[in-house]
Image (cartoon, rainbow, N blue to C red; front, side):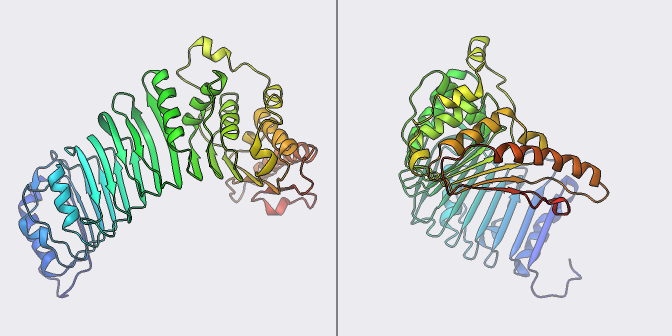
Length: 420
């Protein structure tokens, strides 16, 4: 670094071990002197919080992007990062006061990401302390009690495997997007207390623990999301809704217009899909990604028996009872990554049901996003043959909408059949 003649270094990434730690202050002083804009500092193979960040690092006037991992912020230190827009903090013991000082000392901060951090009880973001913050991401963070976002600028909250202290609370009346993923523990859950402005939600998590807790929690979540227009749901959550459906639990009415599901569409998924269609009376677009697990891993034998049904009879029993099919559903997309997934009898039964009951449907798109490699034409031909078989079945299904167009989209252009 001493040989560097440039007066400004835009980017400096430091990954160090214990033997190098005495040099770190010098390296960071170099970052300050050369007006570094992108600084990455990672402590390797040491206990959390081993390295105390020096005072002068808290006053970097030019830094725009800062990422620190396995470092320690001193309590009571004044932070002044006037140009900082992106901040990532990983594996750090924080506190409410330290986090508040960081946010208030970064007036143009747009994105804050905390990874595997602890020590925070009440995460409070308001417009005075963070006037332009747009995105808050908390990944694998623990010990939280409340997340309070009283700022119109914060549009997105992302939670991955959060561990709240007992039953936590999220209060964010101006939030637009909420995403929850990863593994959740039933003993460290949270409730959605105020999310009235939300327009987009993604629930793609799974849980361990008592299955009754799963049902109750997801139903509460779904009720809180009843005003959200765009919802994405993972396979585990969908299968819990399936359990609500077969148990006869009424579905809350939802204003969802765009619904995306990640599921294989098996007997474990169909009731959940019916539950969502019943709830989403204004649904205009349905997208199904054929991914996820095939079956429950936590059902008792009595509950499993409830899923022994004929798929066509099950869907037929819902015929004429789904308002979204009669008035609103105009577009259905089914996207798969394996040819066999399109041959599922449960998926074909669902396609047949949607075509036969959706009165205003305009497009049904079946898209095969399959890997194509040179030298595998024989394999591609086999896969395409299966897709052609599926297409013949689907094209033979009765259509309730005279304007319904069926489109098959696949990557094997050299085998394209003009009949599709």
